[in-house]
Length: 175
Length: 291
Image (cartoon, rainbow over all chains, first blue to last red; front, side, top):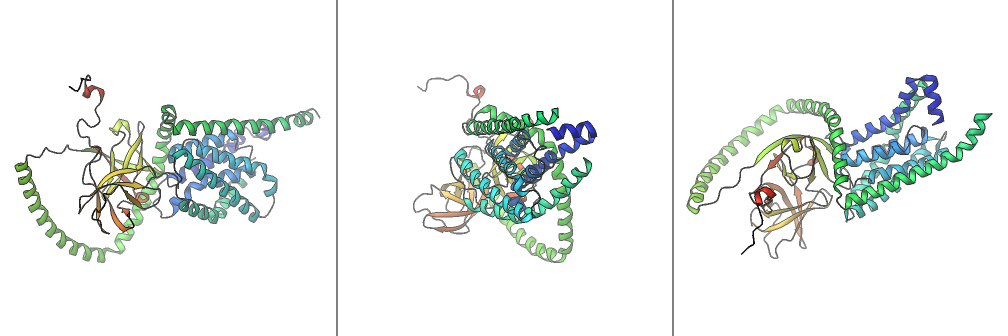
């Protein structure tokens, strides 16, 4: 918040706009995850895209992705996907909470460590979503598709992280 | 100096605020989930509002995607034009034969209907809409379409594609509606086997395959049998193809849906209601004693 205010004071409009970038990029991830591209396999991994974005920004720019923003993004995702309303919000907030708590572990370290961190957080989130989502719908869905989704998302995380990293560099230059 | 002291003071406070915000919002999320599970109309209204609000954005996103897909399809078609032509000629010859058969059967059917004084089926009116979002997740199998209450879409209506049944409408907004796909865990559709006419329920389980439930003991069933809707319940017209039996072993019939929901661009919502099945209060009139 303090850095945000300072940014606004010195840079004015640019500062305010850059502060919105992580939230907007994550919102774009939510939308992209739900658009029917018709590419086989993409539909399976896409739902974990917002998860990757929240994890990434929680480590790099936690002040720009506040709990309220993450909560709102989760609700939008739930509304679009038709998942139990609140499930996605809860999952994304837990991811943010873990990532912000452990961010010093990942900052300035090799990328492999961040990848490993995402693998752990995403697995915990997926397992939690499976159980809570199952409770909310009254029956546990088959774990197979979820496991495939998770494996594919982990394999493609470096690509997502690279793109988000470019955006992060643009933010750093703008400030 | 002053700011440093302030910051020292504010730091743990900010931590506490963060934790408080997290706990508070997590609590709200759980509360929303519970209310949603109980079918709270307010939660549904909020969700529908959010979807209605974001639908134009999603629709804008899907249009270029459709355009690119159309272009790549056109290239594919151009490359395969010779083989396609040969295949289509052959298919055309076969279909002409089928057309003869169909005409003969239609005439025969009409005669038999007249003889038996069959009550005519209600005609379904329909709207066709673009698919703007898929759930694509492991939890739910739904589609969002860009047609809603304003276009005459209502809960329970059947959704079809040229290949067959897609699902049914479960949530309706002003300009959007949500389709529950056949493959969803909560999807149950009354069906019949096309050849033996045996009735059963077609159930989804969030995988890409469907199962038959409550199939009568000793019912005749073979792989490659077509599964069609029975029209029971009066909301889905009878005879809409839904799937093909893939395997039948140990009392478990596995059915492959005819429609690949991941590749759908446009779907048709059928407004087919047998009069009197779901009476509105106005239609039902005052309640009279049954004797």
